[in-house]
Each structure stands twice: as C-alpha cells, then as structure tokens.
Image 1 (tube, one colour):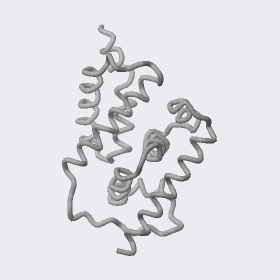
Image 2: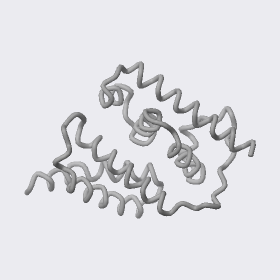
Image 3: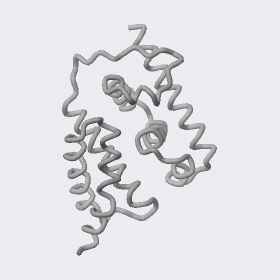
Length: 161
C-alpha cells in the first residue's frame, strides 16, 4: 500500500462527513470527496506539515465545495431573512439559509471567513484554529465572534433590500 492509499483510507470518512455537513447532499459529498483526494494527490508535495493532514484535506474539500457552488450559482437566488436573535450556526441546518451563508461567506475577508468555516463546518476547537494560524486561542474566539457579527450584519442589509 502506498503512502497516499494509507492517507485515503484513514481520512476519507472524515472528509466525507465534513462535506456532508457542508453541502447537505450525500451524493454531492461523495463526488467532492473524490475530487478532494484527487486534488490532494496532485499537491501532496506542497503539504508542509504545519497542520494535521485531516485539517489540510478538509481545507481542500471546502475549496472544492465552494468551486462547485460557484459554478452552479443561481443568479436568481433570494437570500432568506434572518431574525436578529437567530444564531448563525442554526442557520446552517437549513439548506436554503446555508446557501445564503455561503454567498455571504464568499464575500467575507480573511481571516474571518476561514476561522468561521473551520469552526462551524470543520467543527474545529478554538485551540486547533489558533494553532493553524499561529495565534492564541483568544484570537480565534474573537475572530470567530467578529465573523459571526459580520454575517448577521450582511443578512440584515439583505433584509432591508
């Protein structure tokens, strides 16, 4: 068994589950998981080991998912209203609202976008996010909170339109 086959066997389930949570479609998640490992194989030499391999694979998966949605983007998509008291994480549970979040996330600047996605979609702990960025756990918490506030502000602006 090659090294990459070992990586595939050990991490496919993690990547697949991450994608199911991200796109809420099992068949699409399966397709994107395959695309993820194809991309990973092509860029395995670029993996520098600064983060765990499963985190790296999930970042590739997230990019594959966003690429897919960018290609499929529905220009007539109406963004749902968001109650100011509604928690952003609960919005991800609804596919329509998730699509709205993806659109807003796509427009969000870094590091807010990445921290939010790692926390909500990647289900990483603040400690893990901080390690990825070489920052403190407090920085990860504050950055996540600010990202959440930016998403809520964007949704309120859409509500006014």
